[in-house]
Every structure is written in C-alpha cells, then in structure tokens.
Length: 444
Image (cartoon, rainbow, N blue to C red; front, side):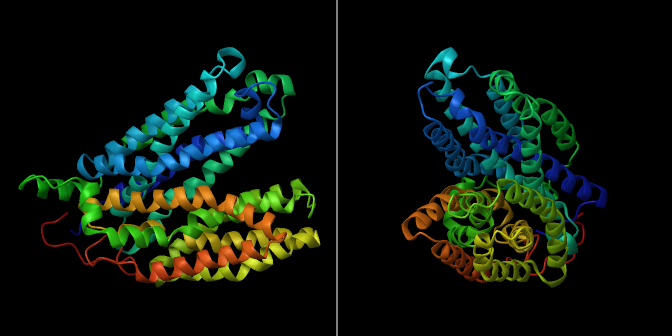
C-alpha cells in the first residue's frame, strides 16, 4: 500500500507530531522532576524520612513505565481501527487532564492515604497516554512524509522527547527560585497547572493535521470486505518475530539513555567521585540541546545512507564511548567530562532518531500502530524502567563502573543484532533506505 501526502500536509503532520510529543513528554517529565524535589515530602506521612519519601515517589514514577505497554495495546487498537488522528487527540487530552489534576490534588496532610493512592491512579493514566502517543505520532509523521524523507520526518516525535524534558526541567527551575514555604505550599503546582495552556495549543495544532493517507487507503479497502481480527491479535499472530526484534532493537535507545543521564548523574556526584552537581547538570542540559540538532542531522543522513546503517553506527559509537564516559569522571576534569557527555549524546541520537522509520517498516499498515507501540512500550517498561536500577545494583555490588560499562556494551550488541535482523517490508513506508516505490496509478 503505497500512498503519498501533499507536501504541506506532510510538514503539518511532522510539526503536529513534534508539538504533541513535546507536550506529552513535558507532562511525563514534570512528574519525574517533582518526584525528585517535593512529592515525597508532600504525599507521604510527615515522619517519613526524605530518602524513603523520594524512593516511594520514584516507585510511583515507575508505575507510568509499566502502564505504557497497555496504553500501546489500547490505543494501537483504536489507531489501527478508528484512525491515527483520533487516537492521538485522545491521548493528548488524557495526559493534559491528568497532569492538570495532579496540580490540584490535595496532599497527605489534607486527605491522608487517599493522596498517594490518587497519585498512583493519575500516574497510571499518564503511562497509558504516553503508551499510545508515541506510536501514533511516529506513524503520522512517517506515513505522511515524502518517499525519500521518511527517516527525517519521522525524527520529529523523537525531538519532542528532548524538548519536553527541557521544558519540564525549566519549569521547575523557575519555581525553585521561590522560598521553601512557597514552593511546598503552592509553587510546585504551577508546572502541572501550566499543562492546561500547552494542551490547548497542542490540540489546536493536532486537529489541523490530516488523517494518515496510509490509514485512509487501508480504511477504504477494508470497507469493501469483512472487518479484520483484533489488531493486537493479528500483530501477535502475524508479526510476533517483528515485535520481538523491535523490542531487541531498543534497549540502548530507551534504556541506555537513562544510564548515561540519570545513573551517570548519581554516580558522578556521589561521595566516591564528588563531581560538582552543577557541572554535570549543566553538561546534561547542553547535551539535551545538542541532541535536538544531532537527531535532525542523523535522521537526515538516514534518508541518504539508510536508517539502519545510521542506527548501527550510533550503537557502535555508544559501545566505544561507554568506557571513557565513566572513566573520565574520577579525573574531575571539567573539560573532559563535558566533552564526553556531549559526544556520547551525539552517538545516542544516532540510535534514536531513525527508529520511527525502521519500526514502521517492520509492520503491515493494518497492525502497524499496534506493532510499533508494543515494541517500543514493552522495551520502555523493561529497559527504561529497570536500566538505572540494574546499573546501581552493579555499582554497589562491584564497587566500580566497569560492570555498568559492560552492561551498556551488551545492550549495544543485542540492539545491533536485532536491528540487522529486523524485517523491512517492501511496501511499507520506510523500507530499506527510506525510499518506497512510486505510487500506483490512481492512488493519490
């Protein structure tokens, strides 16, 4: 099924995917930032020590990761049956409503144990929304894109992740200038409540995006025959190998990221190493800006040499940089530390940016939303949710970072093998290098 979209519609779809994922990831990361700063103190008993409160709030944070595969299944079903656009509008409204509600939520001192219970429920709904968002946003960008630029257009949802994280961090940076009493009484709510404004903007933009031309052609074809079986059932029956290879291709993109950011921050600033928090945070912030540019460049390159080659090149770079990334930390040489963090993020962008084009090419249109959502969100639950924990356990057990380096290298090797073996369907929107056959006569 080869179809083309008007260039204006293609650009609008890419921009809509970028804005939508930026807002949804802003909402997702606002909770993560608040969990580090205030939620442990506000939503658990007053006699809870700080570390226990932070761990409890991070445990609730993990709920969002484990809800994501279910969100992928639920919204994959609607995206493959009802439409990509309808599913994406729903996820945007869900995420924004719940994030706004967290900003209004009474604390433990007001309603007792009901407060953390509601926090768990809201976090679960956030996970459902994010689980359904990525697959649809990726498909809207890729399926609308010109034949020779599908990898580049497909990177815009990926950029939304980085920009959303920057906005969330920036929002809490602003409210952190308040005194402690103001921050704990009302200031922490502002980044959550600001989601309402972002959702209105995102909804206006997303509603202007046309439905995916691939879905429209598929819907018209299905109208002439009996309805297909459930998308999740069809995906598992016909594309189980693709789902598993998709999961295997993602450990570095969705889990390695947290090792070289979240875990690295904890390791470098710990008492054994003692690098300044300001140094590492500033380097990570600069790296996030660099990642946006690097993702655009690596995805542009993917349309010229093939997205799989770019991803494999990025994985090789991450494997080679894994050792130096951690071994420079004890030197406390600011220039070396900043340089390694920046260079590592360039390598990571190569593993991440071209993924929508690769994953969308692994599944037939009728199960594509479900298939790529399952692969991405199951990988997120396993690798994204557990990688920092496993890395910390290895550090504690062996007293040094070399086992963590070994873990990251192993993740790269698994991802390389699965990326090489990943099927690329001939009539999918991004097979091979991103090119696809010319449209059949009569297919617009």
